Length: 399
Length: 32
Image 1 (cartoon, chains in turn orange, purple):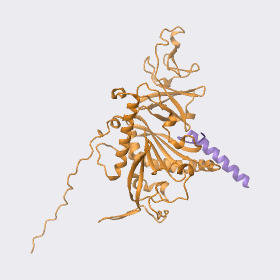
Image 2 (cartoon, each protein chain N blue to C red; image 1 turned 180 degrees about the horizontal axis):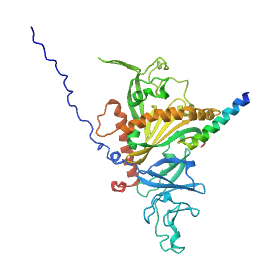
Image 3 (cartoon, helix red, strand yellow; image 1 turned 90 degrees about the vertical axis):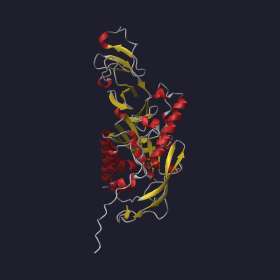
Image 4 (cartoon, rainbow over the protein chains, first blue to last red; image 1 turned 90 degrees about the horizontal axis):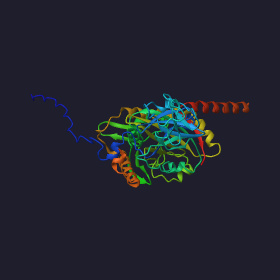
């Protein structure tokens, strides 16, 4: 009788390299927990900015927004007298905003204290105190605010918008909403090569369209954008000893017979909108500073702007754009309002919000598709370093 | 009948747009 063998306990996997412990490889990116200053950010719908002041936090700075004579203004939301938010106040005189506490009244254009209601018309402090003002622009039906790094003049906002959104007519449907989580995690999630095919497999937006199981990817830079270029797509995969896994289902459209498509990630289409085609995007997903995602589909483009509120919160701005003419805008509006805003900017994007809120890193152990993440971090790091150099700003100016 | 259907569609679009403008989602026609 042969002695029975003691069943071997499965050996614990050998301790692998612990992975990346921090983001010190990208020091500016690592330090930008509350966002990169020196860029324009969409903060609120234009029609929400009225003569009644409203508050918003951007890059960790409290900002009060108000509209006067058709122009939107942004000021630091803190009265220098006793620190009361100016957004609690009201407009007593044209072109000004008054603090609710003692009636300190500031000019909207220059932020200078122009009157103190409780100290009479000859108050000697007038003209000696001011609050910071911020450059404001209005694009895409939204108010955009620029938070300077130091005291530099802002670059033109059109230089920062996606190129195809400047000079073309289009219809847009968009969602702006506050979300929990750092803006960098939201941006990394958006550009993350690996997640969509698995996380979003249950999204109603993809109910009838299969996504690949996996694909090979390379990153290509074009201008100020980096693109994820899908090289080979695999619609199912046989994992040794485990079995086959696929996103294909009998009710979903069949994947295209041809190879990888770099417009959209679900396969065939009847054609590509001429405005989108003329952009000659190398890949369907691209990202640029200061955290702008662009996903190009055959007939529309989806953008995500990750607006840094503070280190723990961001604002999600999801924008879907359709360039069609004629009845196209009307049809797009109906489709957007009836289901796209619920299915895509709602449930689909809500899955991303769930993951962003749940993500806690670094430390992290990255895998092959995460070249998308490290490439984005390198882009941000390099572009911001170049920006500081171009502005002639030293590192200490950015603190 | 077709005018009734058209009217219903137009009213539905107007209602949807008005509701949307009060919510977090909006639609806008952008011209250069």
